[in-house]
Length: 247
Length: 96
Image 1 (cartoon, helix red, strand yellow):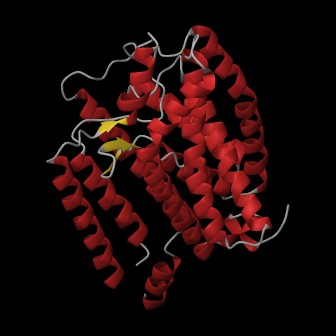
Image 2 (image 1 turned 30 degrees about the vertical axis):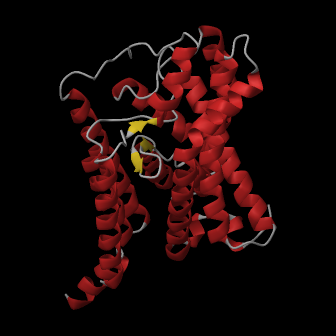
């Protein structure tokens, strides 16, 4: 029974790969879409979070013996999840979860940014998924916005006394939605030209809704399931919020 | 076993549902095409070719499969490091 979660993931992966004959992408902003000025701006916006994450990674790796292995597991998970297209039958389209909400509540939001950056760089280099010039923007939407939104919601829910399952579920849902809202914001900022910023932002955001609302809920279940699994097996790997504590 | 059967049932329903829908008008395009690319093209900034273009023949499938294998292997390696099957090992050692 201990292999059940892995079996579920493997079955879903095979199913999805079988259904989607052609690789598809989702929140990743492709090469060349952002003008150079905007591309540089989003690199600069993401940089402090990456530096903070690398610093926290070094500190926590020295203190916690299991931590590097946890980062490795979460990193591999984010890499696979964020390039796995999932068909959404009610919309007739495909998109992918991000995994950064789960990553943030397992290893912390700043280190989740580092993990996302590595995953997005590999995807841009070898999978034509995203782009090198748009890497900063993609790190900001998936890494920064997704991780901090997910972690923030999780902490808030725990402080309100909600169970860790509900908190992890909401972290997964809202981190996914925050990622796509941020992608809409980035696209609008770079592309709206003379048109109304807010009108275009709402238009892009609404275009994501039919696919991302169900997918965000799926990501919520994924986060709640994975967090519950770790909590039941090795609660010492989790932070004090797992025990209902307050930072 | 009961839970495993439920999982199989869910996956089968998912596959059949998706296959039935795909025979109608669903195109299963990614939201990058239906949303990101659409708005980028409307704004006069269509996506350019990636610097390393893998969309040649079956190369794309190869790279995605390779990424899945490497990602899955890495996840499995660290999973066993974090959650070792202690109970089984203890059981074997006591029998010996």
